[in-house]
Image (cartoon, rainbow, N blue to C red; front, side):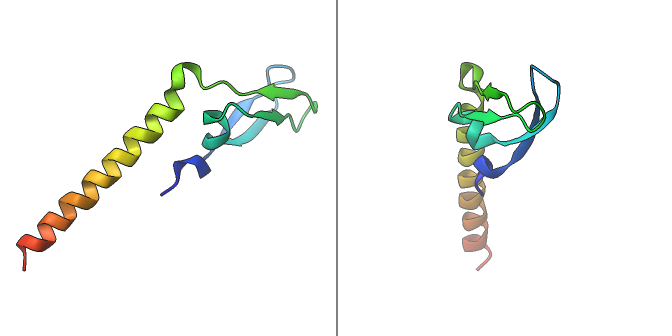
Length: 76
């Protein structure tokens, strides 16, 4: 599962138009163009929260796979 492909909406600070962005764009601090006013929106991953959440989710997924693997080995 790649959470970088999850889409969220951000409001343009200039015109208030809701713009879809991927979490990966936010993590990389990309610039997106507002679909309303065509202005540039600089994304900022404040305090690296998107990066930290991505790492936490990936760790949880890995631990879940390992736990399921252990359960499968026990049931044989």
